[in-house]
Length: 126
Image (cartoon, rainbow, N blue to C red; front, side, top):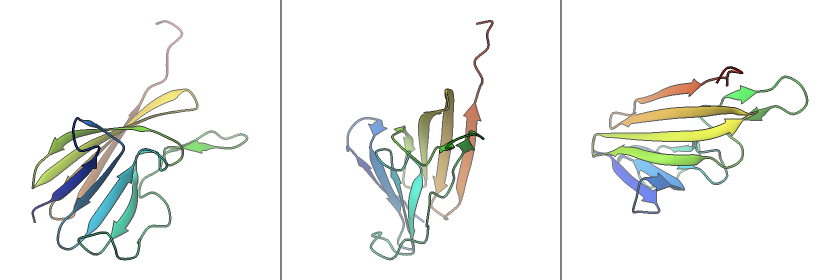
């Protein structure tokens, strides 16, 4: 199914939010308040139906003492990597507990979502 992509701002690759939809579903990303991840899934084309998620679709949680931190909180940066009517790729970047995380989302028109997450620990021998 063809994808409709509505990034904000509409120009450039660095974005604050993005709606991706077909005539059967809508997913929404927000870098400003949801850490850059998918926070909305709706079974309609305009995202006006009820949200099927109670938290982000994919979250990385770090920290075992005190208050853990996650990729679904705070502000992240989002980059629109590919945008066509059959596939969309976004990258979410966020630092959590001093570790840089990159999460790549690939969304296809048939509704499949692929997620890849990367991080690395800084070495003392840099």
